Length: 172
Image (cartoon, rainbow, N blue to C red; front, side, top):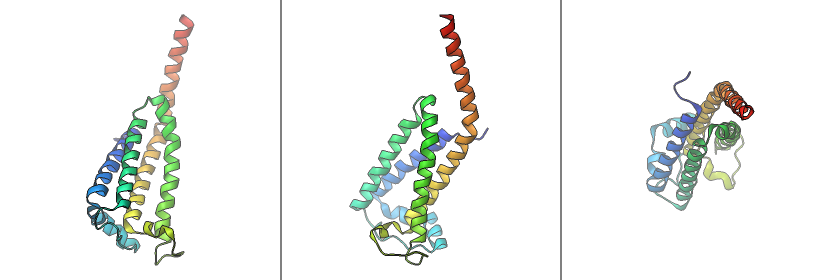
């Protein structure tokens, strides 16, 4: 049995999203100046973002979306296990696919990348977006692996619960 369950990882991601939302709303420069953002950006040769110097409408809407995402994830993970487990078993791979796409886009289409073409997505091609996507992919993949490991335990608990319910119905 691992230290962190899939649901605990999802709760931790929700706390991360709320924290990120707060900093995007109040001080986005602190996010852009983080050591991990600098390290991954330099290692991948991704440009520094220009829109994180001060709060703007773009960082505010990103903060709102992250806060909404955090609250909805906390509510979804707090549901009954019979509903939450199948929901997250489908939701996590979908998120991974989307986040992998954003992370790949910010890397491969960067100004010095293999397939650079100027366009409307230029603001996504920076080290903050890449670091966020990379971190999210890592954490959601970890939750996915934990979910796969917990699938047998969940199925066993569900089977026992339904067996007891069927026995109770027969007795009545």
